Length: 580
Image 1 (cartoon, rainbow, N blue to C red):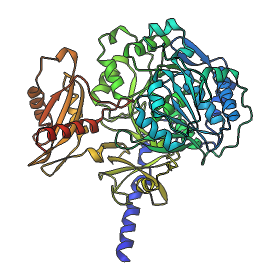
Image 2: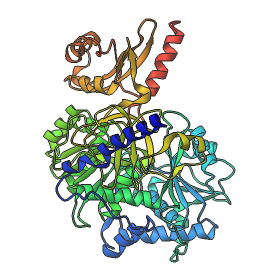
Image 3: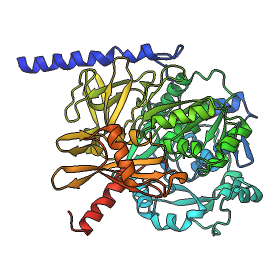
Image 4: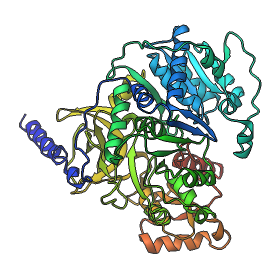
């Protein structure tokens, strides 16, 4: 008993390092330590925007403008259609669409009907489509017609109706041609199971009386995560979770009055980062969102210049694409004020070069689907510390815990990053064993494990050391891929880099780097030259023993480099060569 009491006291002492919120002293002036989140449905942010600024453009889609009032009216009509089909609380509507007016209409309309929305990655093949539809038991699917064949191959019996739509529904043909977008989808034959989304919206009666919603318990979005590391898991995000995160982000930016901002909407909304930081945050701020169905570096730069966009959420590869674009100096990007990078580590060299080109503040943030997603951001006006994911956002407590035990570790120690706050999900859908693994209670709080190894400094800045699964074991050392990648990005010829550990008969693993060279360096620098340069920069132990040049690296839909895919390829190669 005495030993247990002593251990409990040790944990309690360690928790004080985080409970005191040392990060507050590093907050920008005016950023609150806590926010008050109203218990209201998420869709009320659209109702409020349309009430206050009915004529303001909500979505600019390749020349087509949709006002906030029009977006609200169309969402209400879609909600009315869902009610006519018996869809309401407890039901799921799946959305298989790229960024588009249709996505926003279906998203908010589903929430107004009291149902749950479950967006799907449009890069999914039939097997993953089938898995998500089978797991979430969606009754209605809103889908893009250009992917009709793979969608139909992945359909499950629980889907009662598919509502088909296409880029062309809200885009004049000439504009589509200019932007090189496909506008000749297969013809849809309407029947009892296949209908046209646009026609449904136009002919339905708006739903004015919303079903009751418990914001803290009712699931607004069922977001699937883990598809890059295993079978996707459905994270149950409540209306309260999502609204809280929108308000946390807004409090951090201190953007002031509503109805002034211009957002770049290039992040995919089927991913929680784009959904929260662009779609929902944009509507909350009554911003005009410049919507892109797919990433196009030059078109994005043109849009920033033309519309004087000032808020840009992206991933590192987007910022890398901009700073390395041959025409970047031809565009005036100085309207940008707040730029945030998430979903993957932001190399310090990329941040510095982007800020030099644009004059904007580019800040690294952090989050995960299970936290709606944002938990940390570097201060916008204050110090953005190199390699740091920043400070916990208002009303959030972050800590470092033992990766295997429900124990908080003292400040300065390295362990698993854990989060407690209003943005933390309700839990995984139909996965009680996974919920047991990811949640634990300690020190009077409910924590969610992130799977990332981290540490906190004296000023409350957090640093991701690496993913638990990505740590390289070499000669008894633990090597962290991110640290090696940061060094490689400093080389003037390196455009993209990824480091993994590959099996070795003597050393257990050795680090191997996959590198995409900048165009001007191709054929002018060798793998051995890069390796020797890295050895001088990072030392004898940590430098990559093997360098491989590639034309591109495998990436997720949101632009995260997939180390897992590279590792799988290496394992297959070694087996094929008889070395494993």
